[in-house]
Image (cartoon, rainbow, N blue to C red):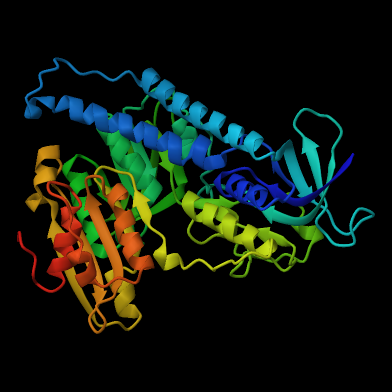
Length: 474
């Protein structure tokens, strides 16, 4: 069986299905090949399930301190099976929604594994897609004018420390836990590792984080990293930086695991019930037929131009498989840009310094643009403004007053170079800063926007005033 399409997309994750919808809007006959479930990692093994668990952890923590709010609840206990059921119910609801969007937009779905073929009787150019169907039916041949590779990524393992799903866990494995361990070692203090550390300590798990760099969240602004470390330690998380984990020392027992790490204080041994490896993600490039094309793979990811074209001009790639910012909202916008370009519509390259980044720990953190260190390295003369949530009435009302908003501005032009936040609900607040960056706003323009009182967003206005030393409440 051979079927012709304007566009075939390998992978139905956030980037893939959004690209498919945009293509359908432009009248392109479109198909998605997905070996698992539409929605991909974000919906089923990443963004959504992890945030559902984080929300349960937040409610549990709040319930335990409800007396501070004048609410007496008695003994508070955690039903982790119910936590997991709630998580799955949310995922199932959203999954149903994505399926509905595919039907609404008349997008064909092939449930199986797709491979790109070389030149053949079907096409003189590489790009025909053979699908190995999950149900074992005859493999269809899809003959597209264009292909988008959106095969995503998977958790990266540490050499010599493979995942076993029982004691040595990936984030995928951790999401499927049926019960909470009493203790866990997290290898990696990046975004995913810190979100897990925050969640698990709120659930009552003893958490140790081993980070190879000299600070956790090494890609965030230095002050954000320091504040996050301080607040996590205050809640009981043990954090060891400059820790080189020695994979060959791992020892697994029936109910525990030990591993050694070299630190500034020598070699130390760490023990816990589980070990969670969180050192980033690896692009899914294997087995999809890249060897049948001229597509280049550099450092494990597919090389593309600013419109996401590969060396084969009719084959595009987006999302985690091309590296860069491995974020769901980035993949979506990359998909839209790629489709606009292949369809001959106006397509503007993405400026990645405009992309908001969020960390859903407690406290939350969010940023857009350059860190103070990056701006200095790029030769800017800077002025900064910082404002604490401790002076914000709504933060005190909410009961979460740790953290701050920091603005990094160009001393010469006053343009916003970066905005960095740590504190309550900052992942919802960062979009204002993102819009300011898109509109090329100056700090004085942000300060002139009237922020309603009492709201957490007042901290943004005050930080903008602080850039010129004019903050009102400090």
